[in-house]
Figure 1 (cartoon, rainbow, N blue to C red):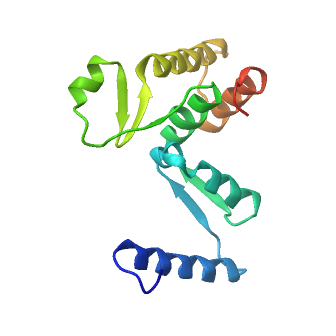
Figure 2: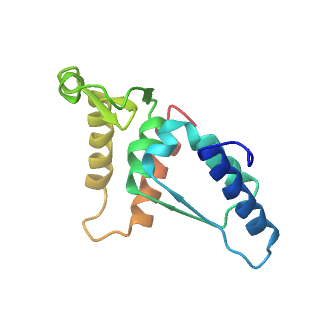
Figure 3: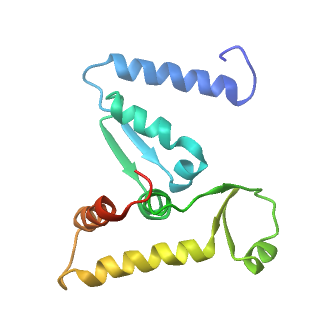
Length: 147
């Protein structure tokens, strides 16, 4: 890919840098994620990076955890769409667009309701994001449709 054009060359350069990072035992590798990338089909790549110890830490947006992973674990799906689709038409059909990915608005509301139910089941106090995510995991351990 290094001898190809456009982003192929950039991808090859990034792969070279990443390979250098992996070979350097003193290098810490942080994987930073935008939520929409997991819905776009990268989740298997991310899980493999963790499984094969190719990253040391992950920094993710809340969307990665709630609107992508938790949403999918409940059995809901993301769909390939079009970034140029008319948002008014999508809204009229209760479809939410995340760039070029679609989700069903009613399913998103069901996901949000479950998050609300989890929050309401907890003792009233301040929670760290880690504590709350742990509660989400407990819920999924019992009720996830997709493992």
